[in-house]
Image (tube, rainbow, N blue to C red; front, side):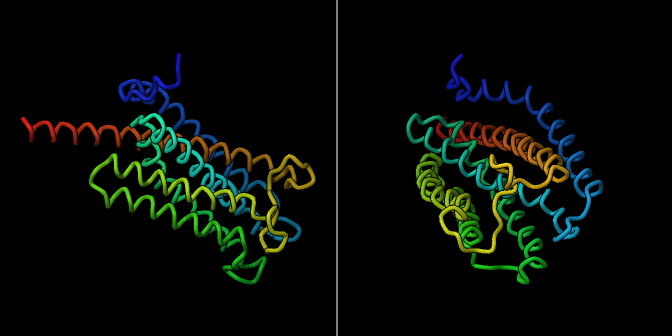
Length: 242
C-alpha cells in the first residue's frame, strides 16, 4: 500500500474516522496522568522551587510549535511537487494549532523566566526566533484568509512556510549557534548529563506524548473539516454553473 493513497480525500476521511477516537482517548489519558503526576506528585526543584513545574507545559508546547511547522513544511512541499490537496489542507489545518502552541510556549516561558531571570522577556536568540516564528504562523493564517483562490493561497503559503522554516531551525538550535543568551539548554537530550532529573523526566515524557496525540487528534478533526468545506465549495460552484 502506498502512502500516496491517503492523498485521496475519501480514503483519508475513512481512515481518520477510525483513528480519531483512539488518538483522542490516548491524548486525554496521557495529558491527565502526566500533568497530575507532574504538578502534584513531583518535588520542588532545589534552585527553582515550584516554578520548575511549568516545564510540563512549556517544553511540550515549544517542541510542538517547532515540529508542527516542520510538518507544515513537508506537507506544503508535497503540494508543490505532487499537487495533493489533502497535504496542503493538512498544513492549513495545522497552522492555528501551531500558533496556539507557540503562544503557550511564549507565555509559559515568560512566567518561568521572570523569577529565574528577573524579567518577563529578554532578546535572547532563541526567544527572538520563537517570536518571529509566531509571527510567521499568524502571517500564514492571514494569507489563507486573504486569498479567495485556494490553489493560489496554497502556492503562496507554501513559500511562506519555506521561509519560516529558517526561524524554526534557529529557534531549535539557537543555543548551539550562539553561546550567549539566558535560555537554558535542552531539558531532554541524548546526552544524559543535560537531561532533567528522572523525577521530572518521566512525567515530562508522558506530557510530551500527550501533546503529540492531542495535535494529531486536532489535526485530524480540522483536516476533515477543511475537506468538507472544500467539497461544499465545489458543490456551490457546480450549482452556479449548472
